[in-house]
Length: 306
Length: 306
Image (cartoon, rainbow over all chains, first blue to last red):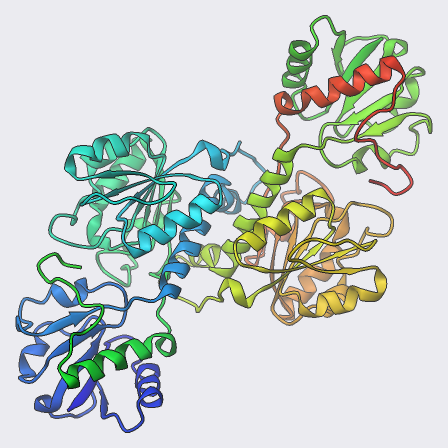
């Protein structure tokens, strides 16, 4: 009964070390270290090579290293009986909230704009109270971001698939209320899970429903955004710009047009980075539950995609 | 009995309009509009031409258009009997607090850094709780900035000339406690008034007392900073960078070395911009008080410089 840590392009060692410290004697392999696939029952994974898990006949659990599980679910060859879990960590929500607050304030106070001008020219700023933040996705992350922005005097509304209530937030739900929600949002923050329904949701028709001059912040997944539509709406002056932390292909290829757009601010998927030592107890708790045959925590509904 | 609005390089019209709306029938001249200097008792001023006020024999009051009065006091030819007032406006403190929060978050989450890289390379971020903000100057602005940062979970300490107490802030005062205050400050925010004692306070000896990697934010006056010392301490790697909103010469000359320093973020004195319509009642209230011979509000102590 062993654990596999698999995270191509990310160093697995901090995870192995944290696991061994939390559960001395645990048998852990760091992919691509040599190991017997039959021995593995529990995998801790970030962007695994597609199809690899079908070679693990005794695999019971795949635990995502982060809050998102789309990088697991997108692989159709994962056996149906394998349970998928995600990380739920207050620090992730805090980090993403701080990051979004930074992006929003940078936008309204035109800091990057002035910094990149390399010349003395000031433009009038809008005040916090004049903005209407629209948050899409009101799960743990969306709720935390809403609270952080409310605390800093922003007007906040939110949209989700199913009805949600959040103190201080004007909430909307479903396809029917989307237009009403978008019509007022001067800063649109995407925090949706990636599902077949939300893929490509940030498209031209969607952008047109936002008021002129609206600003887009995507800290969810690159697949939510139709890239060409964003560029077109910025070029036409309908959108004032965007801050993007996630992309369809990561790392964002050096020849991608986003790099040359002064109105697009690119960050390399840094809204929140999981600290293995802070979340290893969750992983070990579920590892124990798996061994005991009791119900796991932080599991996801594969059909819903989150 | 007339009012002169004098603000070379800034449009006086919004001020004239706001004054006339607040006090119909008031006699206002917008410099350099033709007027009889003997008629002027009340001047509303921003960076007046040096020496000009000595030609106004009946001048009683010079009201600054902003929170700072150094641009008035620095003129030695202003008669001693002229009362100087400043603007006290909650919005100014709010604006400066929002602006400082934006700069601090931009710094800790490395947003400008990544944006300017134009390449996919991420660096680890520090969390809010790991920073120790040091605010110099605990007047109205400094207190507001402290409250805003505390609300966002920052550790905040403060330094002022005379002892001050602020809830949640670890306060220090005077020359004796300066070193102790600086030793712990990882982000140093200058909000001091400009006086002979504070001019050039941000110098090499001062910077050396900060921990390695400290970051400087100056939203007070350019004369607080010894520019060469800042560049030297950044070059040596002792300071990690600076956000500067104020400069010795404004606009900052195009040939100034600051423009080419990637670790220096320049903004064109935009931390807070006074809205004439929001503060005109203060100016008119003092105008009435002057006419009635009663004590004015928001006066400054010329000897102290604030």
